[in-house]
Image 1 (spheres, one colour):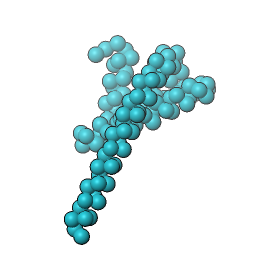
Image 2: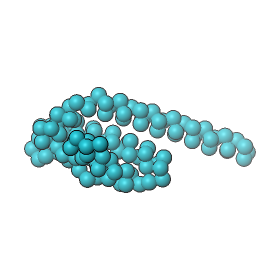
Image 3: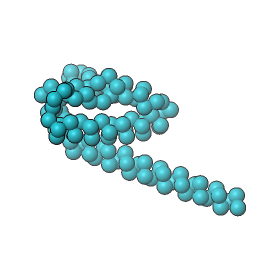
Length: 110
């Protein structure tokens, strides 16, 4: 009985890990696909990089731009969660570090 329970637990962990890896891969693909659109939104001043690692839309922007920003932020969170888990950090810590990196990139720094 113990052996069967152990196999069930191991199978659940393996399935969960695979599903999480797929979600992360999908999020990366979606972010890459919308990268140019997001850059245009930021350059146009319709959104800014917030200090928590997420885009902050300006008031009154078009619904399609708001939807892109929302999707981008959701996928960023998936990535932050994976990085946080792998490094024993919180999602908030990773988001703040990402915000710092994103601001430097936007300013042309390395």
